[in-house]
Image (cartoon, rainbow, N blue to C red):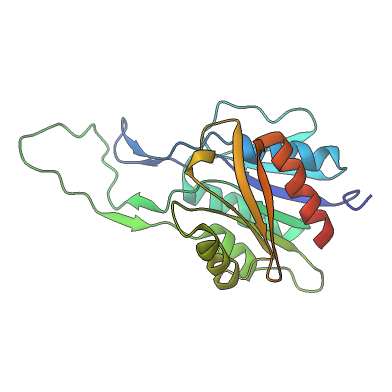
Length: 212
């Protein structure tokens, strides 16, 4: 089997970027797709590690889970692990932004408008692709969640980040148990249809298998 002896690193779930001890910036990702990918890869015979943002979901037996909160924590874990794996799948919905200033105490409401400054977070999957280990092949797979021009944006991400493939999906995939996706490589786009995330995850793992 193609996955036997292979090691896979998957990011899953959202990240949280704190504003103060009470409030944070995040998104509606549940982490379900990343965890379904982990289960599918494990069933196929791979050794699987998941770097998981804040999520109540559990991965299941035989899958190593490293829990993080912020995007920078996720980056640190991923970059430490990625040189030793064969496949990296960036399924996490990483926050694009973090607050310039994190207050030590709860920010009190006032009558004046509140202005906050956001800084861009690191692009984890792009950095992984640029740091591929020399001397052996490593596949790097990204996800592109878009509200419009889905395939065009996914193709641009594939090209600009130097990825081997991108899974294009939309906001309807967040939080639910079903999703619709297209698997893109530099040479083709394969619609995976709409259905339970477990089925789509198995289809994505099969598509990646063809690239091994």
